[in-house]
Image (cartoon, rainbow, N blue to C red; front, top):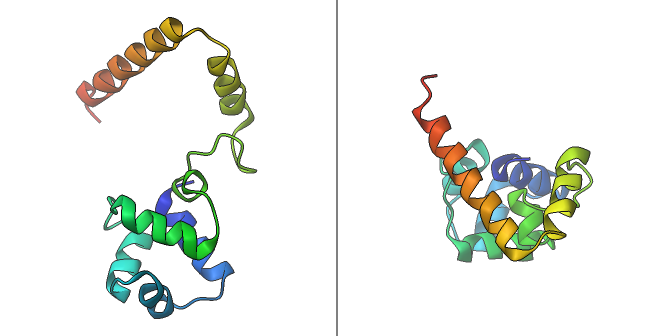
Length: 110
């Protein structure tokens, strides 16, 4: 789940308005709206921590990088578990392969 979607869901679940959320983390209402809509997609770590504190969730849950989250895909969880069991040099090999794959995707016309 994306940061934008998770932020929106947490705000609504906590029954906070855009303005109340903005006031609690010290930013503008428009900035919260832009984050929820994905218009602003690179919040500072300080701001991410403020949101995590406000909603009482981990940063990993907030940014959608918790492999054990209830909505995590089972196949991804299994891959993460397998990855943790590998030796450091094997994990480094996989990291290098993933970087190359990401670069190759960037070269592919859409």
